[in-house]
Length: 242
Ligand code: IPE
Ligand code: IPE
Ligand code: MG
Image (cartoon, rainbow, N blue to C red; front, side, top):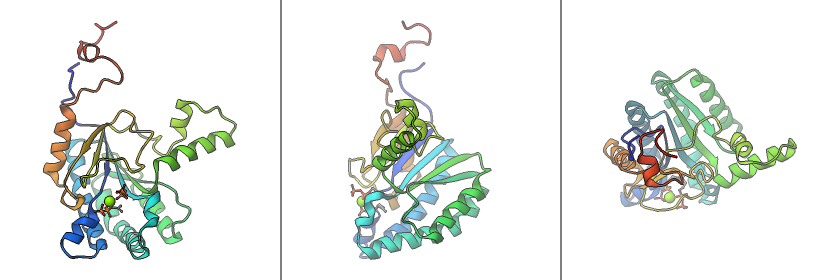
């Protein structure tokens, strides 16, 4: 096995950050940045599928984003409902299976129906999985999984927690990208990113294009993933290490 990873990451996770700044720099309302962010996501989904990424998980709205001004929150909710109606047929045509990950209590009935319908409409697709984390927080995910196990009287272990969490249907992310220049996790996939390779892009999310994605993938391919082992162990041909 080579010491680096000259292959496409199977699971890419992205904190799509920088929409507000993109808009503000253009003297536009912040919601215009979020609208442009949807365009960027459409481009990114296609680029990931074309490159052979198996799972793409994106952070669209965090548990903490409710604390933003009311107009921005309602603008984001409206945008989501509109985007669902528009994008689902295209995603389905492209073989993308959509799942929404996050707390649904607190979302409008119209929104919840939109999420459920989109999941059902794309459930048979197998080319790529797209997880949209909406009203999601890593701490929410861990606490909810623990509460579920406790209610069932099940022992809390790493394996049982893993199975009870929101992304139990996919392996852990290989590559974790954050756009917008900040170098923090902001409560995204705290549990699942234990061994993800982190990549921080200075590009604002609406500007994150194919070349930026390729840059992140190239950085990933240059990393040596050791999972606690030594470099000699992971670079030795399989079967030769003790
Ligand atoms: C990310 O962009 C999108 C959401 C959080 C919904 P931001 O809105 O955080 O953009 P900046 O960070 O203010 O530029
Ligand atoms: C993280 O971005 C959430 C999403 C991209 C949906 P934020 O803009 O909310 O993160 P902070 O507040 O800068 O940490
Ligand atoms: Mg931000």
